[in-house]
Image (cartoon, rainbow, N blue to C red):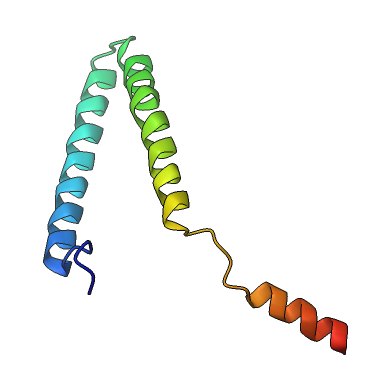
Length: 85
């Protein structure tokens, strides 16, 4: 196991925290919309777009730097086998 990897217990804690935050956020936004706040939904969607747009871009750049999308070379082997047949 690498030093950078999280333990299973830590991953479970993070998953529980994320699930609880999701439920609270859904209840809060539902409560705002139920109270007929006409600015609640656009505000929530705008904040989400401002936060998660750059966050997704940053995480994508990190994954590219790790080489996640780098090929294993299996495609090249398949092409060579097809050429010989």
